[in-house]
Amino acid sequence: MSGRLPFDEPAGFAPGTPLAERMRPRSLDEVAGQRALLGDEGVLALLVRRRELPSLILWGPPGCGKTTIARLLAAACEAELVGFSAVLSGVKEARAVMENARRLRSATGRRTVLFVDEVHRFNKAQQDAFLPYVESGDVALIGATTENPSFELNAALLSRAKVYVLEPLSEEDLVGLLRRALDDIGRGLGARALECPDAALQAIASLAAGDARVAYNLLETAAEAVPRGGTVTPELVRKVAQRRLARYDKEGEEHYNLISALHKSIRNSDPDAGLYWLARMLEGGADPSFVARRLLRVASEDIGTADPRALEQVAAAAHAVEHMGMPECNLALAQAVLYLCLAAKSNAVYVAYGKARRLVEDRPPYPVPLHLRNAPTRLMSELGYGEGYVYAHDTPGKVADMPCLPPELARERIFEPGEEGWEKRIRERLAELAARRRR
Image 1 (tube, rainbow, N blue to C red):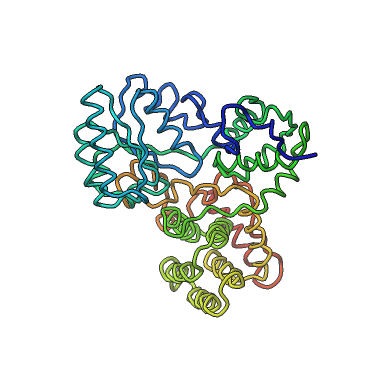
Image 2: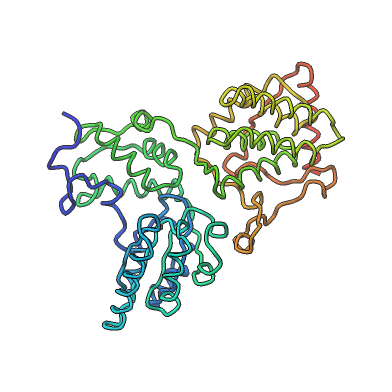
């Protein structure tokens, strides 16, 4: 007999309560990751010790702890926590919440913490209703968002709330959370006495890509597929996970981060990085026509008359996109990227892109290094976006000693040319570029 038995349900929780909810941290000390904010010298930990709670925006990827931290901050400061949906609630509901908050503070001295998930969906009327109460101190606004506040929130709201950036959880953090869930009898899976080797936990952590909720869901699904006292194997994890989709938002900040990384990698004559960022976009669902348009720009902007055929090659790829679409056009775009990086084409495109695609499918979607991100706003500059970027055209030999792949993939060699035709010259070009970088 396999699967969860009725008496496996932890006491104190409604039947069917997900593992992720049962294991939600009960104190700031239990929150994984976010050490810069929650460590002994972290700003949020300092606010808790002082029992101060200003309005703030928590910006970070899914499953990194935004909602949990908001709840715990309110509890630590003995404030009333009220949730508000920017999508489902209107101005009438907002005014009712604000009046209740004003009366509570007047009667008891307690402040209200208004938690707004997906705060980037706040419309102007909602903001206008809340701002006077935020200014008066009756309400401390805690907003959670996965989107860049510079683009998604208006100046009035940003000026009244401090933005704190939360990072994706590391694989080490996720493995620690999973072990706790396996051992915890009261809230987790401890009563089932499951075996879960390190390799299985690492597989879950890798597939979760920094998202604790996804990690808990994968563990719970795998656990339900084995009997009490059974073993969760890496093979079972991969089976229940199916295929992890690359994290990609076709309209959000990550869209601009990735196209910036692709453009700058090509400019820096780095074929490995060019293929990797291309694969991140295409496998994540980017419009191939958008990519082709940017590559046409790159051909003129960063190569130009140094190799006039570059524009012809990209135009041919754009023609292929128009007539084939995805996924058939992916190799045409990969070939164009390689030509722009090396001014040569190769029948090794299929092998090279296949390896790049497997890296995207089998490894976490590593964040774009800060030095490859553009910084069009002050907030992004203060957060280190663009810091350390070296403009290739300003360096001797037009090649900067600057990594364009994520540090986790620094040892990967994605493009391996052969000895046939132009490929021999490409090998020579790669050796020349490597020598210039060393100099």
